Image (cartoon, rainbow, N blue to C red; front, side, top):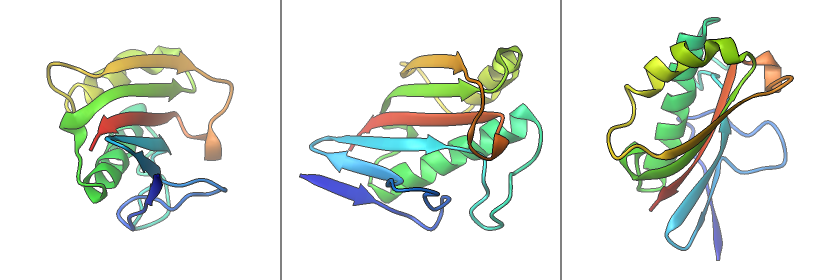
Length: 125
């Protein structure tokens, strides 16, 4: 059975999707852009600030589901510019520890609201 996850501590969905869906022992978190849920605005205009906020949003959703960043098994990072990879990676490393989740990082043509980064994940409950 699919169970939607929603928290006011992360941005509301801006389309017909859930912040996350729990199925069995897994949580599938939708891509999170760097919107600060308190202000509705981007948390900054640098890749570092935007990566921090995207990961804070993931964390809030996972915690609402009774999980956390330590239970993440897979992430996908979408970057507007692959030249931001090293800076994103330095921030990303502050949120995860070994064994690190599996990950893909790709450059895309455009992200919602023209964000610099979007991050989605799959985690254990």
